[in-house]
Length: 276
Length: 305
Image (tube, rainbow over all chains, first blue to last red; front, side):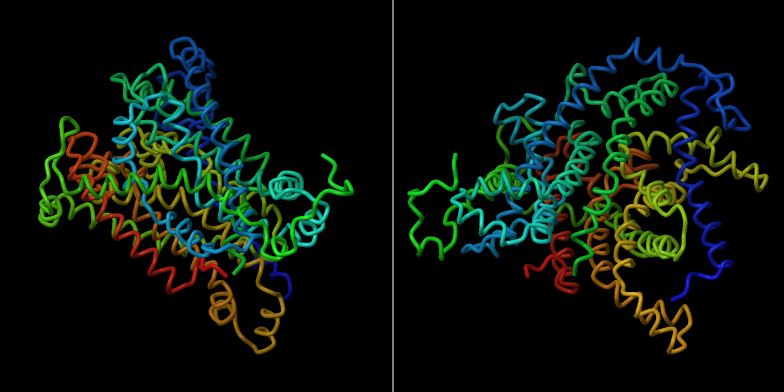
């Protein structure tokens, strides 16, 4: 196939550029509005740029709301669950990729089926179970139940199969390495790109999650970022100005993580689907 | 620990032939412990609760299948199922083809800035749903929203009550779904398109196939595994749709945008009907599970090789 003729490529650019506008406008509007004085946010006709420009929404948010507390809770929860979950998934993915053992097929299918279990189905009984068991620690309830996503294991298995040659494992075994030693010293380093992919995925999932925290966190002092922003918005005066400032600040870590590890994430997500 | 030390007893030959013994079980154990505690046990509890009536205090009252009977005749539940079917149909029928179209455009040979486009379209998935929902609530605002302002600017008229009028509210939810998920699905199609060997297109061209023919006789069959994956993901994902309608419209106006997942949430946490919510959960579980399994069987996604 020759490169597309110039006219067709031109049409493609127009199409993609229009899409960029549709995708970017809502976000740029939010960014720009977060720097507008409250009264200007809904001015008609809409102003694309924040003129006059103000930091007021940000300073007021940081002065009147425990924003850094929300931020800290969200970040600690996301970092801890990411670290543990990546480890658990890599270990199980390694086992599924490189060992033959009785019951493997059954265990794999059991694991894979859990992808089809809707969140909404688990949520009510899980909440009741934790309450009845007297588990109220926010960090426990936000982190532990979501540490083992089947998707992560699936993805890790795919990667181990692709990037860890059997011969390396065999020769390390002949040198007397233990099976866990193999995982730590040989498999993990080879998996680095995949670990990055799973880490961003897992971080974003945890950092952005909203419903589970909404259900289990009742004390405003322990709010995560999404809960804090929601509370601001739900407040009677609908503090749109502070909500926009908070949203922009809250989005920064997600965007940084994503931009830093974008290649790993996009390749990692698609690796399992494309290999038929 | 020195691994080459002479005299370290080698494991017996039979053990080496049989493989590493307990190691793989130990490696998958953490997952299955968590799986058991936080997935299997809750499903069991949910199954039990679905046969009871319980407001959260005292002991659940055994009512047998009464909750399920009530679901069958509950107009709200039927509305929720109907709305969810609409969302699923929209996702499979519009969002998936849209993603394929965008991926096709991104796969144009010689295209510059592909990564920029890909990243921009993917951005919505990276952001918290609450942030997106708040921004869209403001954009959809009837009087002050950017959307109506833009309509007024271009067409001189823009008084759509995006979130307040039942049909428009459904449209608003679906537009948000389209905005949020198209870019995510695009990357799967794009990866699939990149995997199609160029010879196939060249052969089609030599045979004199036009672009439409080539699309249907080369691209579509070659993309089958990816399409299958995407279709199953979207089917199972949209059947559980919760965030978009709940955050944007709270299921309203009335119950115009209520989904099954939202129905469950509402019964459990705002109406304290835990048994009833659990029964709705069991029904949803069965539906999604059967749908997922059926789609897997048809397409062969995730089959252990």
